[in-house]
Length: 196
Image 1: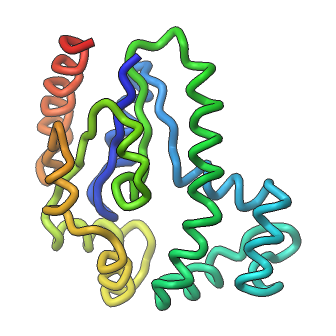
Image 2: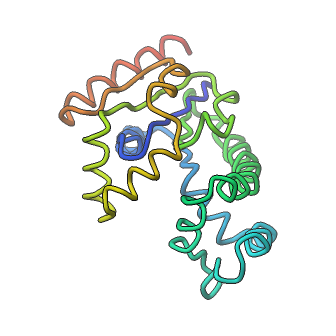
């Protein structure tokens, strides 16, 4: 089984690529979704988050994402503390998921901070979804309704695209049309199948 890491900066379109892969029958583990699930459902993790960020971290048992986002995006130490709590649990969760994927030749792990968290070391191949910064900002503004300043701040908290590309086995350019994206993805998948 080939484990393929899928990453890219905010607004690059890695979720679009994931959705295409899923529609083509591939198994994709979404680290960000699972991290959110764990923060809402793992009691030990919840109490650790409350001990760092206070009781406002949860509203009626649900993670107060706006509150946590405000805390971590303005304080890199707090972001690191949160990541140190969440990432080991996501890694365990991924390994449990992986053990149920034995019929698949290729599986994908989508993660915004695949490289920063060190999870890339567990992958056989890395795909970076790339896109110019101005397009990425516009996509996030359209999607989340944030202001460009807060999007820029989130981008500054992530590794730059050029740095990510240094780790890539494949780079998918997602600045063109959907059919361009599909062609690039198709060529990556055929390379992965060849090496399998």
